[in-house]
Amino acid sequence: TGASRGIGKSIALNFARNGASLVLTCLKEAKALNAIKEEAESYGAKVISFVGDVSSNDFCNTLVSKSADFFGTIDILVNCAGDITRSSTEKMSYEDWHRIIGVNLHSVLYLSKNVMPIMRIKKCGKIINITSQMAHMPHPAASPSYGVSKSGVMALTRHLAQEYAKFNVCINNIAPGSIDT
Image (cartoon, rainbow, N blue to C red; front, side, top):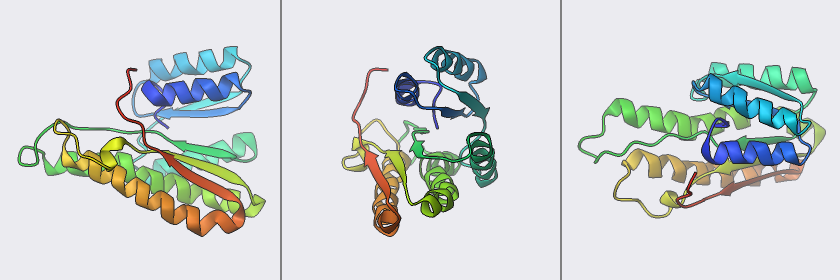
């Protein structure tokens, strides 16, 4: 998820260079996503892409279902979609709060929950959740919704890792700091 730019783009292209087939998704950057798809295909990767909102459980259900149908299985899920606002607590709207929590945290649950039956049945899989250093230490220029959402992803990752280890599903998070993308 979040494959049209930044960390998500770099992850997707690295997987493609290493022989993976890919499902790419982003919120609304169809042109950018198509360019990433074409570049990944130039490395020999088999690629499908979807534009949609990962904060929607319906979209996540469809994304996983169509991906599993197309490829026959799902081996790895990288939850990289993210959003941030940069207003103080008092100036942050409730709409922004809910949007950030939806994209950054709810999407991780929706997608993970949808791929878990596939990975559990075949007794293998990998989920990589991209969190942030702001889950550990707030940044003065970021709204509280970002750090809260990324802290939630870290807690969810620990819970899922413990629950699904017995099925040989490895679940981790990566918490980068600022990256020049």
